Image 1 (tube, rainbow, N blue to C red):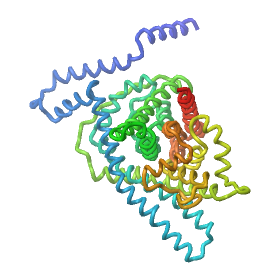
Image 2 (tube, rainbow, N blue to C red; image 1 turned 90 degrees about the vertical axis):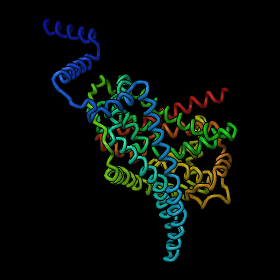
Image 3 (cartoon, rainbow, N blue to C red; image 1 turned 120 degrees about the vertical axis):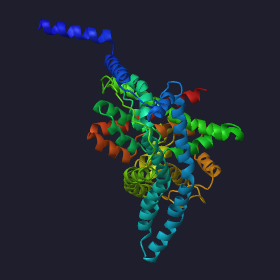
Length: 470
């Protein structure tokens, strides 16, 4: 027993004396020695060989001073192309699926004498929810995922992981979490699946839990709309667009910060452990396979994720229509929930309509704004706006949306806290289903759902109290 204790004491002494990067130092010395030997015994006729371009480019993209700006610029270009490129196809799909097709379906229902409530439930409820999800979700994913995959195929994404490894290691996470986090900006469900690239089960779980802090494409429209109305409205019109864009980017960056903070906290509490060593052999740069990338991105990511979202959106639409039309006495179920939650919601700088919209929009974040607008009309008994109880809709202009929200009692505080809560609320049902499939654990799935909600309520409360003081 004495010898055992002595060995443990000696091991602990060496551990703290040599530091936590001994493995890295050994690996670095081994690779350096191997490189020196290779230079001595290998004769290269053409020093400007096939890998000279790779080496020159790596000196730029993996440099501590130029690597991060290049990474942010490339990701910003991807996001800009996604947002700008998705506008036209989203409008086309919305006009077709949300604008024209419901009228055709209603006329058909009328021709076969379908009961009004059945047509309302399945057309105004279930179908419209699916239509909103497809029109808002499909175009951005069809653009983002191929662009992201092209960067991966080119060989750039491993360099991103290399650049971010030190930062994530300090947070107790893995460098490859940067890739899963970036994928989460397209879709959190896809980001959760992407965590498979992390070998350590502990670090993979951290990446899965924190992926919700990446603003997925379903949450970008809400952020952009609210920032344009409430943040841009605080400054002169000449700089309103720039300020609004800065606010949205600020929320996204704040999400990255929370991801690092949460990773650090989890790695020192419930998922305690040391960050694993990350030995990455950077692949050579190569021309992207465009056609193959388009096919695999569309089939393996976009359509699969979209199908899951549509499957979950249909029952959500049914629920939205039912709670708006079923009454107890003269009060709808939606009004009961709104009145019941309003005191708490107003206390933390939100309102009951927002909370109800996020409850029924768990299957898909894309239907949050249409649901909020519909519930506002129903709850306040507004006439001449919308298409009836339970029928989600969008306004023709930002000014019309602003007027409708202001009638509902919205202030700048409400807008700011909605932007925070849009970042910090439970993952959508598609992502939760994916988390359960990837972890096989109900416990971690529930934790992934509850943890961001608690953070969201807490932060909204703090912002509301500080806001009211000043």
